Image 1: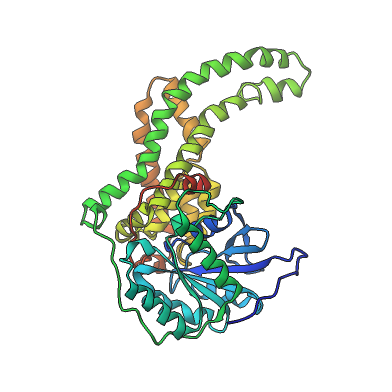
Image 2: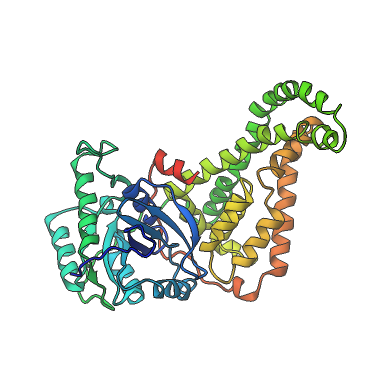
Length: 428
């Protein structure tokens, strides 16, 4: 085991932990649970790899994007080359497929100090034998391995309890990870011992031919449908109330000399139009953020990604990319930021599709407000169809051949779980 030294490079005395793993292994949920912190986003040390930073009194956790082999391997390798020799790599692999993930990822972190966290431990039957297999594997690679249920790893609170009421196991898992980070090992290029078990998630409607595609598209359209309902009920009720509240102020502003009168009280002025942006756009963005957060936290996003990929690849997108395009209806900015996890050959195409076809949190409800004002709310359906068709045509024209020939982007399915309100709130 290696001895740890504190990273005082920035004068903080905090140790840097770089978190690495494939997509859908619970990295972000694990780190958020360990730190109780909300992340800040940025590039990782001059590379093109985007990362999220979580800070505690002792550690700075750098959560790198989930790795998609072939597409992201070189970018990930470049980021890992920037890891200092005194820093720790926390490798995250799922209990349902430990051998395969270690075989793929150990070469990327070879000779780095680190530890392994095995997530989804609640998905396998825990026995004395499974624990012994983990211990044998840890001895084989010379790196501490901690199996956990990432959804229930909580930081201990001052009185010795845990902040979620999940019991003493949460303290054990947390302390086990902290001890592993304090005494990491050196990663080898490969493991010679294997556990020899793989657990596949049960099939759902998403894996069925045709039905899976229809179900996935319906789920992607669901946030838009909820936004339409919301805009024509609550926001529709608020609109005249807000207008009446701001009317005296707008009338007074109209008496001011130009350019103030024009800026404040013009038909599209700050006081005459500005408040309605919050009435229509703000709630719509929140609805999309919460629903997409639920989709991600429950594993639905990955199931939809796998289901939609064969269809989307024909026009130059992947299933993952289409999810990002739909996210743009809530807000284009996080949708574009999320393209950092798209495969290299489709990222630019996805950003183009978001720019062309995603009516953002202002454009979408503003259009709904126009339809409602003229009593033709039913135009929402044709409007979305026109957006979809023209976007697909645009993508098909500009997409490079490599995008249409890309291989499936997800190597395995994900387990569907009930949403964790705290994790959904963090995502939103």
